[in-house]
Length: 406
Image (cartoon, rainbow, N blue to C red; front, side, top):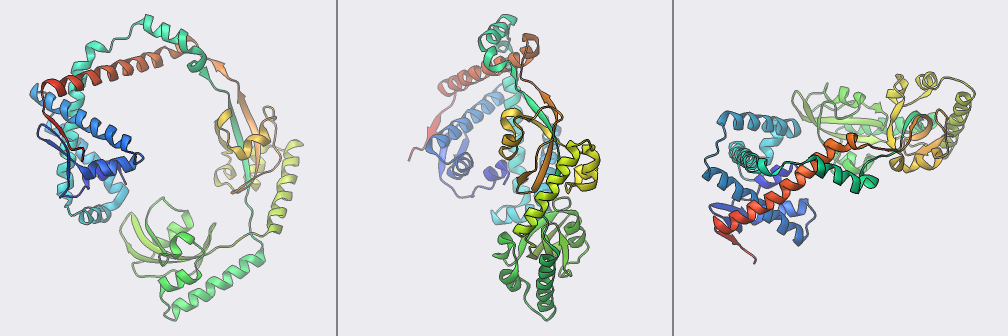
C-alpha cells in the first residue's frame, strides 16, 4: 500500500508517542512506518525524530507567517487523489476507508493538512537555506581531485539483442490439457460451484487456495487474450475455455466497471516435457549457426522469435552495465566480441540467442563532465548540515518536546 496511506489509515484511538507543541504523533503511525522500513527499534527512533523535525519546522514557518495558497494545495490534493483512484479504483478507495473506519472526506482532510505542511516546509527551507548553499568552484575542484578514482568513472556497458525460443508443450500435452479443462467446464455447466472446482482442479497456486479469486484487474495489467475475454463478460457470467501463454482458462467475472474487473479463474497449465526442452534446444542451436553463417539477426527474429517485441523487429534487449548483466547471460557472453552471436542460453523464459550489438568500454569522466553533479551533491550535503542545525536550535529555543519512551 502507498506509504502515505499507511500513515493516514492509522486507528482513531491510539497511544500518543510524542508531542511537539500542538502536534501529536500516534504509536500506530510509527509502528506502520517502522515495519515499512524494516521494523527495528533504531529505525523507529529515526522515523520519530524525522517526524518531529518536520513538525517543528512547519510550526516555525507558521510563526514567520509564511503562506501557502489554497489553490496550490487543492491542485496537489486533486492530483494525489487521482493517483489513488488509478491505483485502487473508486470502489477500492472507499473499501479501504471503510475498513479503517473513516470516510473518503476524512482521508481528503488528512491529505490536505499533509500537503499544506509539505509546502510550508519547502518554503521555510528555501528561505533559510539559500545563504548557506553556495558551492565554490574551488570546493568542486578539490572534491573531484580527491574522489575521481571512485566517482568519475562511467562503467563499461553492453547492448544486447536477443531471439527467444520458448519451450512449448507437444500436441499430446495440449490435447490432455484440453480434455481436462473441458471436463471441468462440463461440471460447471451441470451446476458445480466455481470456487470448489477451482480449489480442486486449478493449477494456479496463488488463486486456487482462494477459490480461484485473482482480485481486481485493470486494463493493461494482463495479457491481451485474457483481457479481451474478461472485459467482454457481464458480472456473474462464466467464460468458455480459452487459451493464453499461461495455459487454458475458465473465468468468472464477479463485478466490473469501465476500467477494471473482479475475476476468479480455473487454470489448467500446459507443461512442457523433457523432450520438448531438447527439441527447442536443437532448434535454437540450428538457428544460432544459421546466423553465425551470415543470416541477418533481425530478419531471423521476425520469423522465429517468441518475444512479441523482437518478432516485430525490435530485438534490442537493453543496455547493461557489464557488472550487472543477468547471471544467466554473463558467463555465456563474457568472451564474445562486438557483433558476435552466442550459443543458446537457457532461462526460465526459454532459450535465448544473444548478439553483442555494441560494447562501450569503461571511461574516466573529466572534471567538466562531473562538475554539475558534484555541485549538486555538495549543495545537498550543506543543506543537510544546516537542516540538522535548524531543527536542533528550534527544539532548544522554541518548542516543548515530550516523548513517550514506555
